[in-house]
Length: 298
Image 1: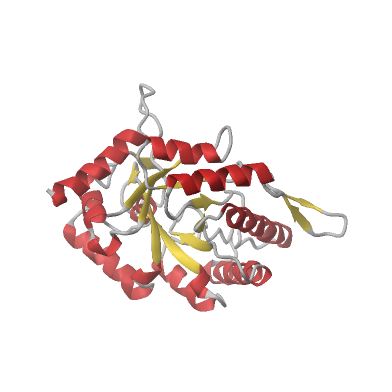
Image 2 (image 1 turned 180 degrees about the horizontal axis):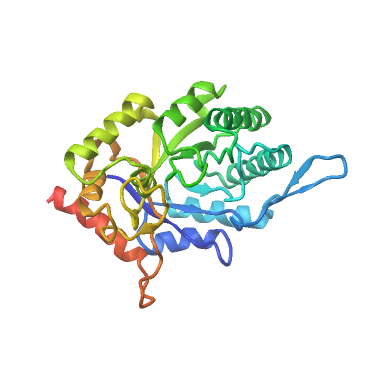
């Protein structure tokens, strides 16, 4: 069966997310290893960028909690500030250093995956932006030859100049990165829908995954972000909604969690944490996914 989880808070310590996942009956979890809106690198006098390591006690507590919980495919998402496609030298070099630091943190915690958005070309053009992303990934991989954590490139809604809204972008990156086996793909259902790939009917669902398989290959699909979309098909606007509460609807998620091709894949909720009345929604959205699975099993 799929491994259900959610992106959970690490307030009070990284291991708290593991405890919360267990309490909710999850089989996997995703975290930030630091505030996603802050840089964790600073310039050095000789012009390099210096990263910030996790405290040893934090690493030990997380590893112990994860081992006890027996969660699978533990994952981190990188900082929103990182742009591996940046056309300006300073931001590009800073982003490479920060992404390397994200990999260092993920490796120290024993995580399976680090999810990242491909970046934004900011007017330089898709071809130039994708080439810079491939080059950046080659740099961080060469610097860390023995790391086990995989980088998962996430499909995006395509807002602004963001890369990653077309399957062809990922085909290019897998072909132009020196060590593609250290990569995988994260498919966010909200993002792919907002980018123009329909999932709502059986025919649309089948066509979208057939196109993914043709251009990229399903073997590269390692993890799902399971989110409904507040905005319509092709809007190119990234706004998540609870399962069945957006423009995608229940049927696509029922298909996804019962699709035999994805029966062992982690499926991470990034849906709103509370409803309008302040009630927690992770248990509700998790319950919907579990109910869809039970319907078929029954």
